[in-house]
Length: 386
Ligand SMILES: [Zn+2]
Image (tube, rainbow, N blue to C red; front, side):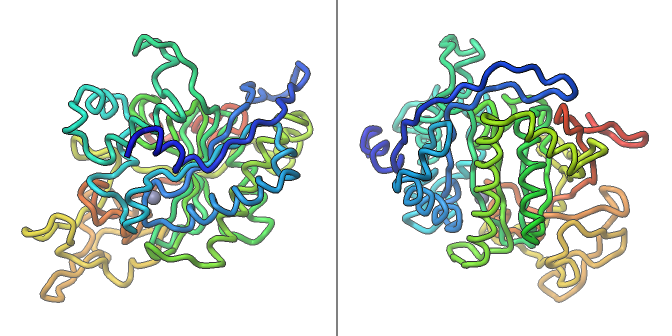
């Protein structure tokens, strides 16, 4: 498929709206996230079998096409199906995980390859970088100094694990982390179970996920949802989070001081509870995982089951000796204490993590807090918070 054809298919439409500039008032008590948001992309189907996000993108397109809704946003909203080929095939990906193709190293490798040697996802990553980015164009590293097309990306995902609404953000960007705090508060008012997960990659360049093309980004992860299935309740849960995020961005442009005052009332200590991935122990891993062995004839098929006592127990503690996996003989494999004890587990039995290309295993979480004003983790006395 040519790029122009892909553009026509994959960008539903783009609304050009009146850009409303907020007058330059000073905000003395707390640092307002200062960036002005002019363009927002809402992406679904980065993983082709996560239908909830695609449904929400299509519903948003209909809502915006009615005019009144789109006119109420002081920024331009674009929509995108991340991986249309995988979506049509109802697969997570065709060749490899698209959501691991946007680190500096992965992008450089794709751009240095012959077009004929690119995987479907490498080719798509280059296209998406052209559409929503470029991710590295603004830094001068690549010599272009082109500002990214999108100021903010909201990427919609589902998980088969019992993660409810998890808002995944990077560290140190107050606009994004204040948005996450706002969404968490608004969704909890609607009785949704919400948490914030903070990534602590070294820098923007090291972050491999699609949303990091933009200077500000946010991944909404909803579970449990089976792959390739739509559920009314989970669509509603995702829409509540998405709409709250767009509402935050709108209010951030129109009434920033009132919005900040409201956030400070919601979180009087200025400390926002969150989780983050535990640091990797093994070399080459992005974060700590409890890994099961894979079938010798199929790297995507686990040789061990996740034990029923751990199933659906995301964000719960396990200790050394607790049941963790079950092997082909029905023997229980206990947790060996390799990552400390007790530990918190998350993304338990996530279908996407059966794939070697996505990183097999169960993720390990740490409880943390970040500062509402700065979006950075608050150092703990006995903790590694680098
Ligand atoms: Zn996903």
